[in-house]
Image (tube, rainbow, N blue to C red; front, side):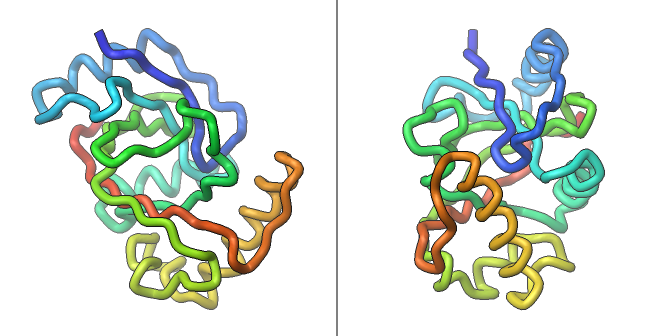
Length: 170
């Protein structure tokens, strides 16, 4: 039996999930998951900062318009339950905590924030791909998230670019 870690990698807002519904969703997707999780577990995550944003991002991921996300080791350091892993799986939830997809992390790279280019932001939603849009959105995000951890945003902070593929839809 797979162990689940419940988390919200990007949102960090309370999203209520039912462990039973998530586990049932994971079990129903097993035929579409070709290899077991690289680290022996799956994570549960919502991506976004508000319920509205979470639901928009779910739609963008399910449509194939968003194929990756950005975080920082400064946010997940030392917490295995929120650390992305190449070959790892996440159950993507909507703002109500309902499972909507199984994502498999295909690629990860870490770059300084100030070296992120449109080559990397191409995995974002179409509106957030231009650097003049992506940068201020992520400066705000990282500033808020790091502040809650007693850290400060800096231009050369490490940023993890995580690419994923949708393995199963709910």
